[in-house]
Amino acid sequence: MVSDLVVDYKGRRDRLVSGLNAIPGVSCQLPQGAIYAFSNVGSFGVPVRQLANRLLIDAGVAVLPGTDFGEFGESYIRLCFATALEDIDAALERISRFLDQEL
Image 1 (tube, rainbow, N blue to C red):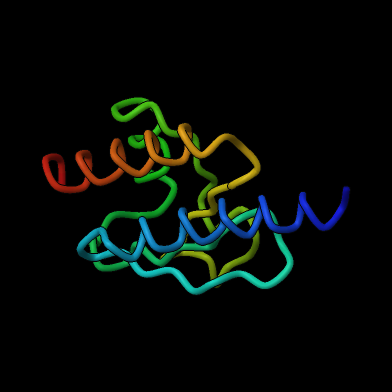
Image 2 (spheres, rainbow, N blue to C red; image 1 turned 135 degrees about the horizontal axis):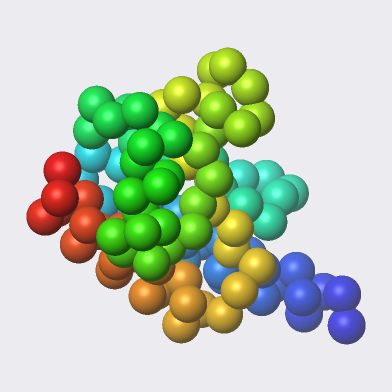
């Protein structure tokens, strides 16, 4: 049923956003009607395309650099939450560990 799916995706969204906001230096507003979150990572001082590549290679987490969506996306990465909660939790752990140890 569609209402069950909406509740499920809200839970995934909330888990991802709260997890991102718990990482020092990362901030993320609650998206309203999308299956992705746009998270600000500008405090790390690394070009966002470089950060996205390092997250993929060094942490095993695929994100898109905000610059793929326009010139004002330099401080942002985009993460999709249309996946299992276990995968969201694993990605958050990997991102947190990478940002804490590598940057």
